[in-house]
Length: 196
Image (cartoon, rainbow, N blue to C red; front, side, top):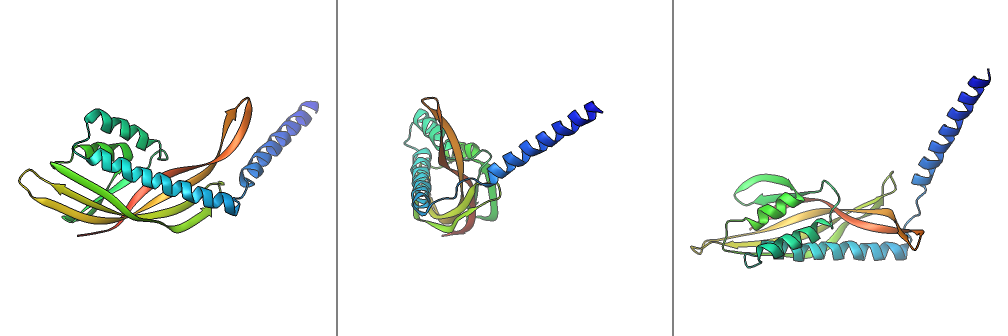
């Protein structure tokens, strides 16, 4: 009879511990208005950084070693498993690639000169809290792509892209103490339209 009592007590304590963990996860601190403004600014800054990195990686004058170094920096901006959409005026199909694969393909484009610029970077979807405690928002950008081949042929398009932004609470250890902070990572970059 005692063993049944111990088993029941053990199961009850395990249940209590799991409920406490779930309660703690759903009771992450809310984003204060000042903190939210700082996070919005950080997310926009990371998107601007990505714009610079893509321009450098795609530029045919960038040395191979430098392009690879910039790829590693750019990868730090993304959540694991993020994908990048690629479109063309020559096809209605949008193809999606893992971010690293996208960067490698960008380096290997068959043009003698490539110029990529982003403009009109802005939030189109405010940060919304998810059941897991993270916040998710969407930033939209317009990308102008110009590629010129050796024979002078020029390809040019403008693509509207939507970038998913994840904001989540993380911890780091500083001087033996755990310090909580909000981190921003970029997710999938989806193509919404491509024009000339």
